[in-house]
Length: 235
Image: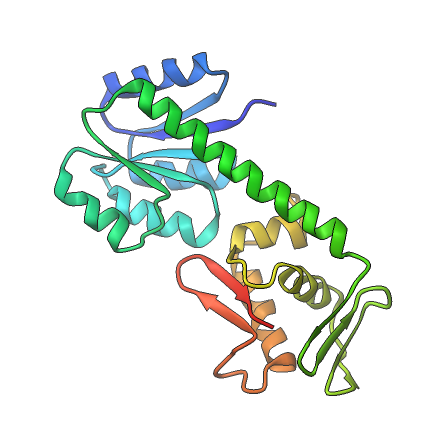
């Protein structure tokens, strides 16, 4: 199945040019010409990459990027017509993975798209490989012990009564200690693609887990929130 690229741009000529060149590279191309449509389409279609213009009707690219980054880990390539906007896009950490200033070389844009998609594939492959290697292990983090063969978790020697989904979430986070995991990726790997709920589900389950595994749930040190992205397990 070909990878899906969502092009968000309000200049019809540029949309047509981008769609044509991406299609020639065997990508499936979706297009949106304003920010709100882009958000709805991304939520519905789950693109593999988004090419996002900074200046858009209804919602600008920065706001679109900020909203989508809270919900999914899709790579985002930002397009800007003004050099001074680069600091806003990247420096304010709204979540863009790369940016290009107009006018740009179509060949370079295609190379950037290819590189971002390749990086995303490698990340997912590495996570899958780590899952396979670590499935049979018992993980120990201080007084917290996760026995994956028995599906048991203890803290200070006392058995913790975790719901099945809490256990699945904890083991997924723990197996990827130190890696920032987006809410979208967590939903995909713990709940599955067919799950209809939103990212708020992840936040609720993390809250429940913190009540059980953190020394101080109000000041968590094991499951750390990475603002605007997701969570990182520190152990």
